[in-house]
Image (tube, rainbow, N blue to C red):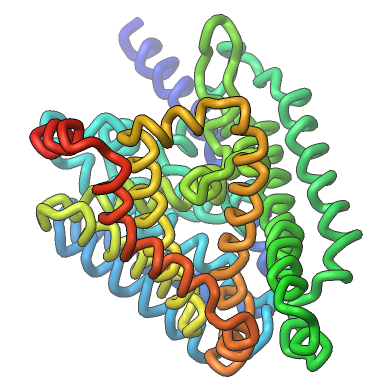
Length: 439
């Protein structure tokens, strides 16, 4: 009886193991097929980096050295890829999915390291992602090449992937998830965004900025073109991310528990489309855009720099990391530095409105719809402003465009930053200023 019990137990372990093995193989080969179809023999770049990452985990253990070596190797490999393949155009090449993979592999080293720490030393999200044991090579390849996130994301942890393979990410325990309808809704929304981009992008090409025709247009026309161009160009990213999210929802990876008796499917949400379309704030747009990458950077860069003791310094370091992660072009540096400056000024402006009785009253008055329209105009004009550098890449191109509009974005936010203390002094009563300072 005892021998029979051991045999049955062994059989159950094997039957649980075999389906997971098949799933890992399927995910690995599907990702390899996508890489081969799009990039041919260059798929070896991803395969090599995944293998090296696995060997680091196996041979170096749960150490800070593992994390540092992983970060250094993966980023140097990515940056070398950027250096040797970079052109002055937006190219679809192997470095595009590889930048997504780089975050996955670096995040994997952090999660493996966290799995060896005392739970009391970890945050709630670190506990959720921490790995209790070293993953197998096949598991790492399946995680890395999972077809729902290999090409454009979203980012997710190996723990989430393990739960997916184990069949735990479902609203019906023991059954496949009822995710077809929510997945198709995201697909339909993504397809709509793709249609909008396909229809309007020919009217707002990046190349138009460099023509004599654009330079000959009135100043107001050049600014409005930037506004409309920014709205259209971002649908390229929105459509890809929302459709990829639909894939993740369909498989169950998007399952995020039950709230008020209703299953949530937003675990892999990379876009909050309604917030993206309606927010009049730069911070709101950033919060609604490329959510999982921003969350990855917050969890694995910003919060891990807590030892610096300065949030601003941690914020700058995080933006610098995102800058070089995107590429080596000067346009990325200008874009993210401008983003930091804009967000800083906006936070000061929001604090001013909150603390000033006059501005607070005006913001809650019947005039707000008009204020909202004006705010949206400036919001999208100056959201498109740093995107010009992001999309044109090189110094000679974005400098020509900014010169043609007299560096209005830089001038506007510099003036706003300089006069903000005087506005606060004029619009916030002294008593409230003293109370705010004490708080």
